[in-house]
Amino acid sequence: MNTYFNGLELRLLRQLNHLSLEDLSTHVGKSRQFLHKIEMNQVAPTSDLIGVLSNFFNVKTEIFFSSHPILQEEQINFRSNKTAKVFTKQSVIAQGEYLKRLVEFIEANLRLPKYSIPSVDPVQNFQDIENAALHFRKHFNLGLGPISDMTKLCEMLGVFVTTFPSVSNEVDALSIASKRPIFVNNEDSSTCRQRFNLAHELGHLVLHDGCVTGDSLTESQAHRFASALLIPQEMMNSHFRYCFNGRFNWNKLSKMKMDWKISKAALLYRAKSLGLIDDVSYRSGYIHLKRTGEALLETEDKDIPREIPHLLENCFKALNKKGISANDIANELNISLDLLNKVTQLNHQMPNTSKLQLVI
Image 1: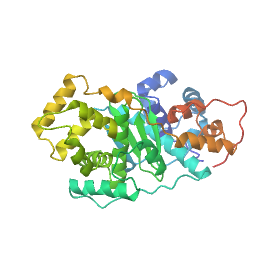
Image 2 (image 1 turned 60 degrees about the horizontal axis):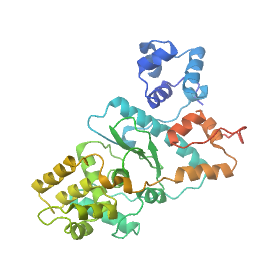
Image 3 (image 1 turned 120 degrees about the vertical axis):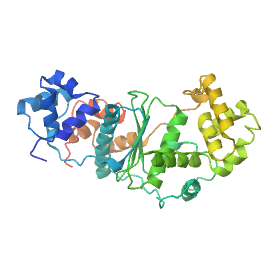
Image 4 (image 1 turned 180 degrees about the horizontal axis):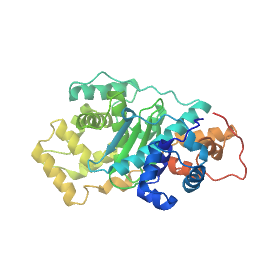
């Protein structure tokens, strides 16, 4: 363990709890400037202040002396609105950091599904992306039909999937391209949106391994990969013609959405991208969705069942069979059980006694 106070750990906890420096200053009775210097490792807090911070965040004091490597920019694929506040992004990224540490602990104690997602050379055009999505389907024997459960697919490929509580409408998803990838979805998004987010993040892993993402080019490429993965070009060409013959047949488009679990808005965009409709028809379709109140939430969304992640919860069950409780895991991560539940979006209860003290 590090013998020096690590200010980055304080910053992570503050961001995870959606607190500004001013907010924290009010709670612990220290100035914003002084707390900033602590986070930047310019000054060291007293033992009394460390105790106050530990009690306030409900963590063990040891967490402030850890030397965990913090996520680097190129490891994070962050999907958000262009207007997303930096503060909002930081909060979600902080959750991702603690999830990464949890997954590292799990990997040290369990045999997990093998992670093997093939990456491709830098793509030159959109057809390369279409081909990459087809190769992905062929590699994993997915055929050309609808993918019934994107969450289950990701977990079978060795990716951890979880959600974060909606702090605003600014953030859709986060993926962490570490040794064991982690996808974090917005829990308030529709099932179609969550499925598209997962396909989008898979696109980053396939197309942008080791690259910094978030710019318009990498986002548009991952967007195209997601569309191509969810409904291959050949299937889109053959199915969409029943939905549009000079004008939209919204009943058939609704059925196509339910069959493929892709939003009507995404189907319209896919059709435009493949040249199945022109810009005028696309705008007409978008205006229709907006006029009917479906620009944000489409009528069929309530009828598409949620896809529930199981890998993380199953790992907790497997660890419990080995005598390692959720409380033990929280202790080893130097956080409270409440904070572990917040990070994982699970609901483990505090046992009467700890089953086992672990050493990583």
